Length: 308
Image (cartoon, rainbow, N blue to C red; front, side):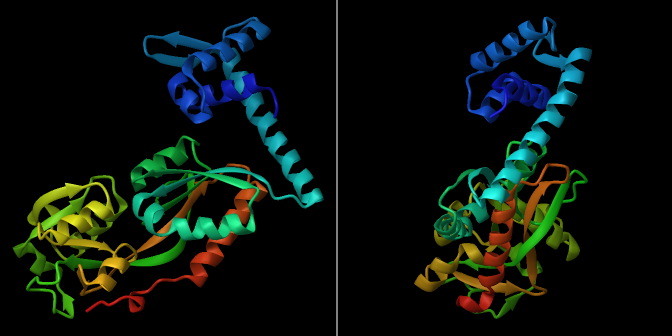
């Protein structure tokens, strides 16, 4: 690896935070500060202006940052050329995924990927869609997989598969035998939402608006932060909810939940998200291509589970 101090400097300069840089580099904050001070001593000048809870690049720091960007791009290109010449596919990736995808789609996908590429190490960071997009913007992850489409000029978004969302309820609920539901009928029952920032929450809110309903019109009895918590609350008869078909396969087979399609249907994409300008490395291309094929081969439609 090229000069560790330069890598630390570039990370601090990009994030403008010693704390965030330490987290990104899996270092302690004092270790990051020490590396920066060593580099400043070598250059015999300050690279950062340090204020109260705020840092910024000096004019010299800005020039060093420009050169460090070019150095690391060239270094990455050199690594990839050598790997292509030798046929090696090794390295490490940091993957970010929203909660639903991390819990219900990625275990099987990454298990298959590791069987094919055992030398590639993958670290997974999980959050809601908003968190994953933020991590991608701050260059803390190499690839994100999220619920919904992303409208961000700095990021590339690519649909990997479609996901159907269904109304879920206890098996004894009075709506459980319906073949489909108009969303207006849900206004009469307590409703369980995902947290603000969740891709599922955003998709449901947009769907409600398309049907002339503001989400505030639903009887919001709970807001929960994961699909598992939502399912548990619905099974306990605390309310109805709308959930991904992918998250309720087991419960529908066991008969602990019932699911009914909405009319009109509610679908959303699962999307790959990556930076536009980041240099593409072979290991990321291998994961992307493998994931595209996996999604193509494992399209899980509603026909694979027992839905009314």
